[in-house]
Image 1 (cartoon, rainbow, N blue to C red):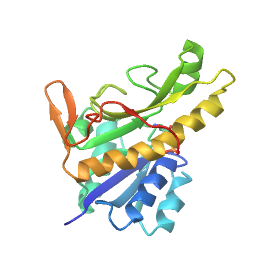
Image 2: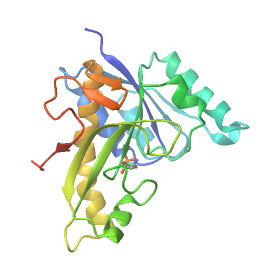
Image 3: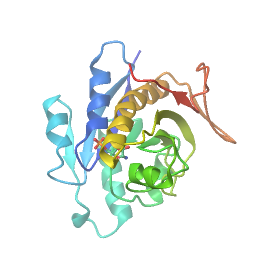
Length: 216
Ligand code: GRF
């Protein structure tokens, strides 16, 4: 069966992108990474993708008069590569309203908190400041509102008494690297369906809405 073609947008180190590339390298995985685009020319993730033989591109907002024209340029490159699912992976630029419309139901993001708590930057620091005992990560469909689209799956981690932003972020990141490839697999297997209330994941006992995921 043809593999689902995934396009990834990054701005930085690209560890989630690398996790998706690693997953896609295993023979039975039903998706392939067709193209990686960065809005930052020296993003450390770019050489990782290129080194894996994946097509890469840099699109700078400086070359575009407004957000939508930037987003249309990104889309055009994904279309050239036959992309069917777009995954944001540490992409730090706010999208125009046009982009989530163009990729409706086929645009996902990973965020380092149990949304809807702690949207935006420094999610681990926000969790520590709030004193929560559990945090985690969320993969969700992207809508025009920041970090607010329907939740597809979540993985939870404990917040430990002596955690710093670094230690908690690292614990969450290890779960991100498990969760994102799993959700992309679900898309490739045609399990993810938008419903009136949000998203259901067919054939997954938890429904995909909450995944308690102890570290191996
Ligand atoms: C991750 O924590 C992700 O959840 C957030 O940005 C960070 C990106 O890290 N959206 P990386 O570039 O994937 O290493």
